Image 1 (cartoon, rainbow, N blue to C red):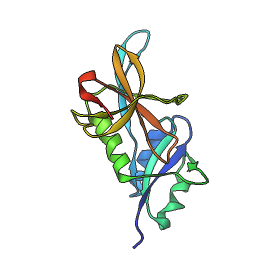
Image 2: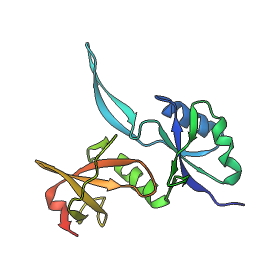
Image 3: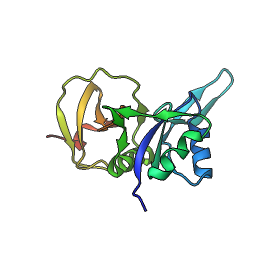
Image 4: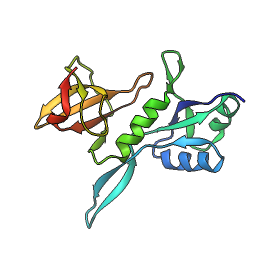
Length: 166
C-alpha cells in the first residue's frame, strides 16, 4: 500500500464546499478549513462559515487516488509550488485545524507583501512553541504563520503577553 500525502487542490470559485462534500462521498480524505464571519444583509446579520483559503481544498491521497480527485466537478487542478505539487505536512494540517477550532480571531490573507519583521515565539496558549513573524502593530499583535511549501497563509491575533522574542 502506498503512503498518502496532503496535496492542495485549486477549485472553481465558490465551489470549495461542493468539492469537499464530493470528495468525502468518494471516500477521499479531504479537509476544508472554515472560519466563522458575520455577514451583513439589508434586513439581517448572520454568522456563516467561509473557507479560510478561497478556491483551495486539501486532500490526503496516495498515488492511485491522485488522478481520481481530478474527476470531481469543481476541481480545476492541483496546486504546484517550485515546479512540484504543493505538499502540506501533517503538522501544518494540524496547525490549521487548531487555528480553525480555537477562539482566536482567524482571518484569511489573500495577498501580503512579505517584509522582514521581528520573529517571535508564542509562550502561552494553544499555539505555544510556534514561531511566527509580527506583521502589524495596531493595538493587538498580529502574527503571520507562513506555511512552508504552499502559497497559502493566515493571520492570528495573539495577545502581547503570549509572545517572547525568538
